[in-house]
Image 1 (cartoon, rainbow, N blue to C red):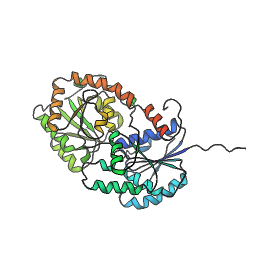
Image 2 (tube, one colour):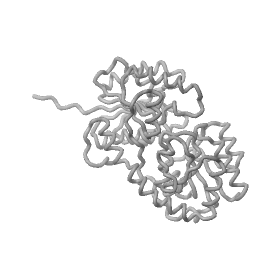
Image 3 (tube, one colour):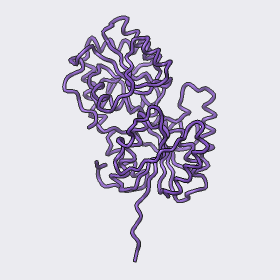
Image 4 (cartoon, one colour):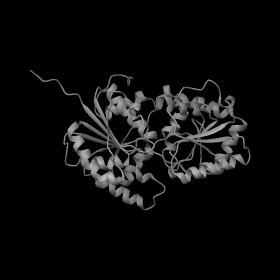
Length: 372
């Protein structure tokens, strides 16, 4: 008599449990449960910005395992992660972001020969614009971690090209996705919302997002129209927060998804000043909320924004200031573009598309739709 077939086991490993990376890990884990019928585990670290109730971001069937990975814990994490993977006996191991990607491949070296390893950097470290020659060190570490064979999974064409250039590896493309149902359109246009008109951004306050440029744009707009309120939803580097507040930017700290959706719906413009991105989830969320997007031309942003079609792009502070002031004076054209951008984003960045492509990546044939 044949024994029952074992369910496929999928294990996600992630150290960066916040913002866009957390969104994509939770989507990938949930799709593996709902559309692939897999047994799914998420091995995760905890950061200061990690949501307190992390389980609320996952399907109840996803099993969570906390494991410290950064700093002094890095070396011991390899041993503990190796033991945990051995206990779970996964068919698929999906690593997310640089730290988990490096530690996970070391933990899987010469171990679990039948498991397939995937690695989603979510903006691979060599794309950073603030590291100079260190990019060569990071590239060397990526090659070192190649002691465990894995498939690179790029979230944008910019990232795929960076992997090819710096690591010498080919990457599969799996663009990010966002559930539009979580970002309903506002019932009233932004200019009719209470208080002053708002320019908003969402994300960790760190050099990658260039808060200094955001502050400079705020000052430039206020010099001509002090009624415009600039808001940064998030938290992070203390010095960067101080620069923002001294320039008149309101820093709210982290908010839950419902509050962020409300802020986006009541914003005149979503402004991204990022210096580099993998593929910005927050920009996609703004599009799905019907919020006009003004984004700096950088890797990641250029993979999402088609200037004049689904948003506006800029290179310099003065350009951004002029765009914001134009929106204040006459918001109708920009809002009309935002309304056109929403269905385009719904089609390109929908969870069903992501689930189908993830299943193909894992070589599992899913039923139609991602399921809930």
